[in-house]
Image 1: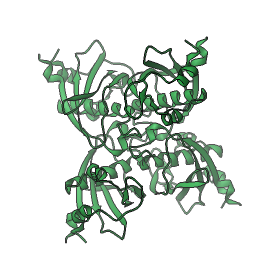
Image 2: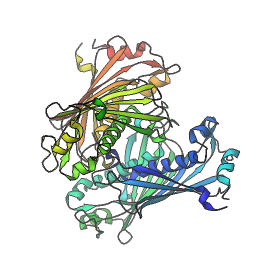
Image 3: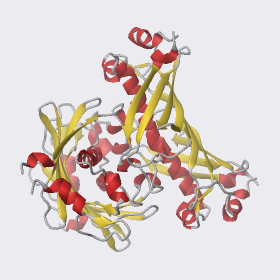
Length: 137
Length: 137
Length: 137
Length: 137
């Protein structure tokens, strides 16, 4: 009922390899952090993405959007807040907010559709997924 | 006059390090290709970004958007088509299309504003930049 | 006294972005895992590398060696075992072993020397570093 | 006869995404440059690695070694010099030297063995490979 059930927070420590010569996290690296956010969301729901793939489903990224509001710096501990929106037909939208202490550094979303691993064809979300994220619809 | 003057095409060969276990280019890596596109656009205009930084200007990415239409595969030669839009006040929008043969694989844009290197404060685009990309306005 | 004092173990979860089309972690990514290992070793000794940089010292990598024995796969939880060797003059050697359950996947080392941040010149290790890792000499 | 036949030189332009907060190329990224070197060596011999994989052979990296002598900086154009050593039984050693103008920045090598794609089992190098790199033995 409450959208709380579709939220999750992960932590990420910024590494030297994440930074660029501006002294901040290279903007392209945030899509990796979004990946961490949605993967840990699913694991937290008892539904590891690796298991989903094993069961013949994949969830490729169709679209991604990022807003870079403030820079993250080396050794910062970031929080990745992930929010899975109610399904819109076959489309799944996942929202992310990356924060450090009280500040929002990056905001974004990714859009996905389920595909069957063998055929790469779009498919309805598997039942177990609906059960797991469906409560909030 | 024609928007042709604000276009550029670069080539990129897909490497093993760009792929992921789906056998295709990891979606997060396309932001690096967008970087290549706009950097080579500027170099082609006689305005290397490294020179711009040396002159005290930076052009950080404020927003980015990608649509992943078709996968790129190992060893593919991709074309990165870059189109710089007319300035909208202090905002600069750059559009990208990544193609292989006739197919469009990825489409996206980045939004930027100029900042002074010392202060990281937004600033009007430098004269030399306006001269270089300004023709098409 | 015991070399135990110069050991540390960190954990790392393999992400999609770490894998390549062979379905395993791209070999070049293990140097990032070595970085995580030595950074967390130092933090665990109360000596975050970010603090060391703040105090004017850097510890660039001069050499690196890796042996890739077995592949790591998506979603594996790896252990990064880090062992700091006794200083050899100005040279610092750090050894790494990356394991999954009982299996050793990757073994390697990096060699470093301290430099002053302002000059990038080699320097003797700072006193606080000797205190922190010195017990085992 | 001459070892010249087993040499190749590729070029690489340093991107923002390659740098770290020290303002230089992150050391872990050089393994990607080694990959470019050996891939372009093979293509230059008429033997694209993608074709080799298609024919059922893979050439995983078993060991890698790098020496970081001088830093590469943003927008540098680097030369990747690749030298394939005569086969030592099933082991293939490839040497790399990364230079800018006259300076050697990085030196290293990788060690490989051929495996069959289906089984991942070590195998003798395919005939076409011996023909292609064999001249220099």
